[in-house]
Amino acid sequence: MTEADARIRLYQASDDKLVRFSIGKASMEGLAVANRSAFFHPFTLSTWVALSCIMIQYLNWWPKPEYGLLGYLPPLPAFGCWGAVILYLMDWFNRPYFEDASLDLLRRPDVADIANYYRRSPSSGFFILEYSGKFVGLIAIDASKDSQSQDTLMDKGKSSSSLKSKHTIPQGTSSVATIRHFYIEEPYRKAGIQNDLLAHTIQHAFKADNAVKEIKVTTTSLILYAQKCIRDAGFTLEKPIGKFGIYGWKFDLLVLRRAQWEKQDAVL
Image (cartoon, rainbow, N blue to C red; front, side):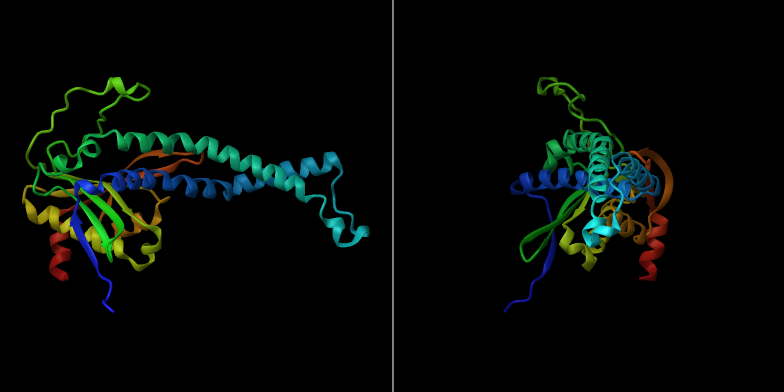
């Protein structure tokens, strides 16, 4: 019996559908975490209990111990009703942000033509991680001249006919590389396989072209495995870049500079 092995390879045209699906899935993953975190927030729990108690008082659904064990069941529908309402409201407030972010990613030039976009700089790359031939995850690093661009090929709210007919894609390498996509399938995260994928990508970016002086990436605590992996790799906070969701979860911009990476590499 042959031992299963993991490998990191470059993106191929046959990966296109799976990659697009995974990019959208990764973007929407934070929604479930945001809804769960919002529901268990102290303010939400306090509101849930208060509204349930008001309903119980109004309908006189307080427990009646004289009926035995069944006498303690009347309050439960009130808690269940308000729990469902609050869960719906959490999703209603949080979902638009994640849907817009997902669509924004899928409309960007790098996703429209992955192979050619990540071929413009030797330090760029779109890597697929496989385990026993099965897709495990992906990472994309952009070191092109427009590596920090957030432009899309379609304006929000317009039809497909509004696709920009021309989009300049300059060749060459920027001093700043950006990790645009990073995703690992959930069953493999506990093994820490994402650390190997990220280390491979960082090494590729810095060694392929000395023009790259730093690598930047955006993270959020809602995707904890990715944030932890990135921080463990030596990335440090450059600045907070925004908040989102009903409780204002933060987006942070992290950076790894070449000097710091070379110091870490020398120690290892």
